[in-house]
Amino acid sequence: MVFSPKLVGEIAGIRMKNPVMVASGTFGFGKEYSDFVNLSDLGAIVTKGTSLDPWPGNPPERIAETAAGMLNAIGLQNDGVDSLIKEKLPWLAEFDVPVIVNIIGKTVDEYAEVARRLDGVQGVAGLEVNISCPNIKHGGIAFGTDPKMTEQVVRAVRSATRLPVIPKLSPNVTDIVLFARICVDAGAGAVSLINTLVGTAIDAETRRFRLANITGGLSGPAIKPIALRMVWQVAQAVDIPVIGIGGIMSAEDAVEFFLAGADAIQVGTASFVNPTAAVEIAKGLDEYLARHGFGHIGEIVGTVQAS
Image 1 (cartoon, one colour):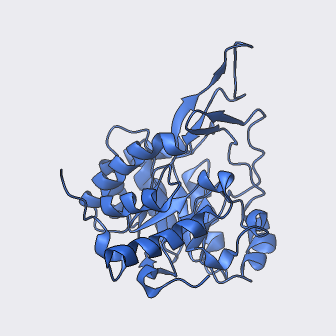
Image 2: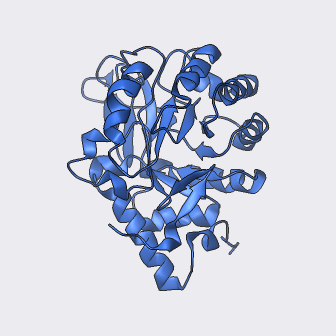
């Protein structure tokens, strides 16, 4: 698909043909969706979370559908960074799309070492630092809800790589602006937000929790109003690009995030419903700009007005 120049942009030095990425954990490593969508039509692929060593993830049941979204407690199962470098990145290199690797760790040193191993690897455009996953027992949200730990992780990753560093922020905090500012001071080139909210689900008939982990990350349309509010708050407070995530199912949803101040967006749960959602949303953005007479997507960023 050919997009107009109106959608071309750059986030933390990563040039994209359109500002619509696919969110980590919802698109695998791209191959899983390649039969349904031309990966080269995407603004960027954010890979599934990748750790230093393989992680087994949580036991099933690990997914539960909710009234307006889903809960997941996958536990960041992955084969480790060496497998990513040897097996997955060479395949992705066949496509004309930036690849941003989502990195995870149980310690600050593990985050830094994953970043170090990916530094200079062909095909890696940037690193999204997952300090906000709510469904693992070590690391993850513990780093993203403690200001000192957030600063330590982001600074360590920044020191270990020349790649753009994009921390992914947790909504499970009192003041997300505080954490965004900490990331800026620690050397982040952009921030992405939000990750999932902590939730649970219970089967009334069996009287059991639906997830083996009991709690999981809530995503989908249910969290969009919260994500939109937080993106608006952060965009006003920092001078680096903001990537909006949370319940984006349509081009109209995406437009709302740009109006709130996002410079790019990620599509997550929508891809489970419609594998081509991200490309369709990019096309819809193109049509929106033409319909309203805008020359570039940047013209609408942060332009929402009070009623």
